[in-house]
Amino acid sequence: MSDETNNKVDLTALAADIKRWGGELGFQQIGITDIDLYDDERHLLNWLKDDMHGEMDYMQRHGTKRSRPDELVEGTVRVISARMDYLPENHRAMDTTLEDQASAYISRYSLGRDYHKVLRNRLNTLAKKISTVVGEFGYRAFTDSAPVLEKALAQKAGLGWVGKHSNLINQKAGSWFFLGELYTDLPLPTDQAAKNHCGQCTDCIDICPTQAIIAPYKVDARRCISYLTIELRGSIPVEFRRAMGNRIYGCDDCQLVCPWNRFASLSEEPDFAPRHNLDSATLIELFSWSEDEFYKKTQGSAIRRIGYECWLRNVAVALGNCEKDEAVLNALEARKDDASALVKEHVEWALANLDGDY
Image (tube, rainbow, N blue to C red; front, top):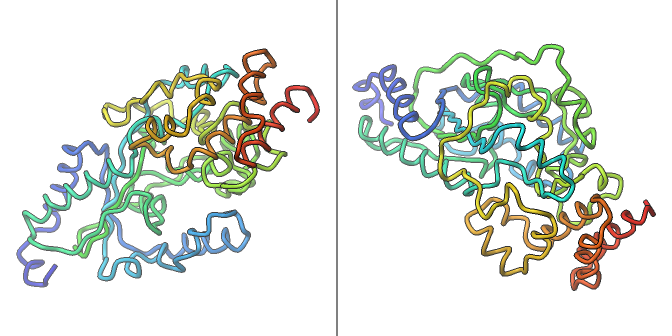
């Protein structure tokens, strides 16, 4: 934005308009922050130095661009941070699915339309509204799609604090929400950073099935079920397979026990409603999908990114954690000679685990 335009625009009024427009576009909250992430950069670099990112090479591929917004997008002086609720059902329903070994548990953020597309489209619409006031200006929209420290930025923008499980928590809305950002060259007034309210609570640390939260605010991704089922492309370490239970895509346990989520609201966004009954599907049903069915039924979904092979790998492990019965054995036996060595290995483990060999 030029200095001449800057002098003509009431930036305080514009910031208020941006927050109002954000609400009209379906965001539950908008905050604005500067780009100083010095402390968060140190935390990130130490985490990477300890190899906590596993095979997520993209976490270090871009150097300091992740923690220095103006290196990623030249001219950036402010970040407009937005959050949007996605919770599709209450905690009791999720607990019921987790407790039913025959049911497939899929992290609730991924049951509906791919959130990347939903939020990015809304953010670009927000930017167009801003341009009606300021004219052309520098901006770029992000939703978990580039080297961005979105949780750190959201905390600075007042949307919540980073909890001990590394998710963002809002005092009035819990943590079941997506984040998105507009990097901009508009020198908007900033909001006050959120304060931490975790206190002495360790519920998220205690509940983690694989003890991936190795210390408050420090998650070893290599142990995390979300990493193992989504990011990891090879064999899932045997030591974590039983702990996966029936979780075939991601894990929500740390959010389910967080006391602040008693304030979470169910999403009213149609795009986040479950598709293809993925909130209630059985493991056997999903294991029977052909490759064509998988790609057809995950079209427009975040789930598609793991691919069919890893999908079968994950479901095979979950079936191996079921009660042993004829239907489960038949499902696994049907893929015992799968063309994929990865799938075959996990099917063999599942059958052996059902026989008590692990």
